[in-house]
Figure (cartoon, rainbow, N blue to C red):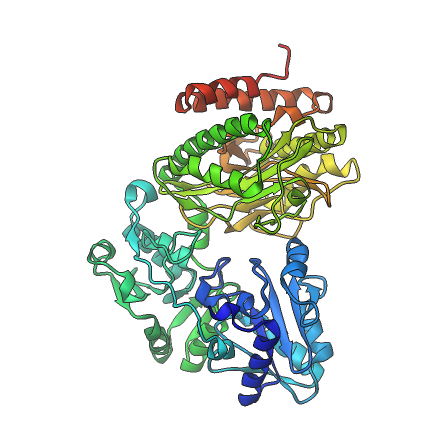
Length: 602
């Protein structure tokens, strides 16, 4: 394999030679593909091939005499382990941004190259300003120089794209397209360029297998004002059944026909909507050059995709029941197996996947399972490997963050389990995390409230002890689509998107003691209407908990819970016994009864 031929130093030298041949003295290497998505296929994972870093967020800047890798706090330890420090200085993606590195280190007169398919317009402008500050220039390259030196590059994926039945989607593609076309007309747009595969697959009621954890087909599309769609997709992915499903209002072309289609929009002086936060600069360059008027606005699929319809909500409830039964069977197995000793992270997570695979409509995992024992649980995005995995030792904590893709829904759940007897500190920290989880799950809030306004509710019990966690409290989740979905989220960072009925979001506060243990409790919740305020008639919203899996009572310190919190936990566990019990074998059902006994004495 090419990835094993020659080390990072040789690859870096070959890249610099290729850049010199093209008249550039540096290059920006983001972890991105043409669609700007979270996951990229192996053929587009250029950052990993060049540097060895395999995290889901990162960036490298290669200059003639130095290079740097930029990652956020989730990946600091991983980057140090995977990347040669003598070749790449490691910087914090947010606190020490690449633009500052470029401004300080690019030499006057030098050209920093970039691939316009892999950066958004805003990123291009930011890096251009940094280059100009250094006295250099930013230069768009006609093709990616890494592709020229990557001799055994994997082929782009070409998995079949398949129809997604209306029994799962709830609304036909034709109805979705008509609704969005009316919205385009309101915005005085005559077309919208769609570059996010999950948006296109949602719009066309289509799914695929081009990415390992997200069931999408990589493609582009143009939604026209008449509700027709021009779909640009590798025709090897398209079957007769899919063509029939898409119908005559969806015209299919090869991906390389997109440029000509954009040029035609410009030649016709069309007003074209494109999302500057999620589309490649290449799209904007083509539209500008051809004379189109660009309406810079969010992807029109984002909000309707995020607000699940009644069929999607019922589907995700059903998926979570099956998923909860699988997870409960796993936890019952773990309780028995852990007492015997000898368990290790990879084998344990494989066993969980086996339980899930037995469920109806299972299609795969929704992300790589985080299976962290002891100190590994404190690494927020830990990925077990033969070199790093630990045993589940007596007196330790085990954190498992996992999820699955089902035809009727996407799941994501984290549970922290005591192996043997936990310490008083572990119980204190776990209970504070639980209190924050309950505070968010049970809150009521007025219509118009954003996730960032609720974030502090989940942190307050930890803050009271001088503690916190360095990740967001909640992310949006799709319906048999991406496990991470916008525009909604719950986090410290500013987010003006109000939470709307039908949105699914995670509730996942945590606590991490470096070198010792990690704690996270994650359920998915759906935003629901709770009636109106009696004072002003304003609509009130709250959350419906979707995830069904027991919370380890061995880690709960009852004296830290108030009466309302205790009632919430007891009611949640009573619900598990009622809804999951019929789905379990006798042994697992008996374990669930024991593991969810009420804390209250009423």
